[in-house]
Length: 109
Image (cartoon, rainbow, N blue to C red; front, side):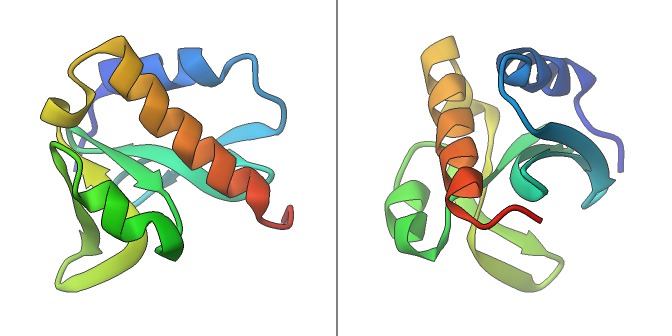
């Protein structure tokens, strides 16, 4: 599956000042890792955000957000966000910040 290169470029630009960021192809898209842990990614035209299990319920209550799934397997703690959920810069940055914050809370790999 192809992914939205423009969205990936937006995420990449917002992460450019962060330390310990790397990119990796995964889930049919591109994932941005922080300290070796997935923080955010782009799959198709959706933003993928790792928020952790404790923040999952709040995250899926936001516009455009749903549980990320691999086929029929829902992944609690991982959110897929449609363009409705990042319609402006502030929303996109909020999702990216949440993913980076969660990834930084984990031990580096």
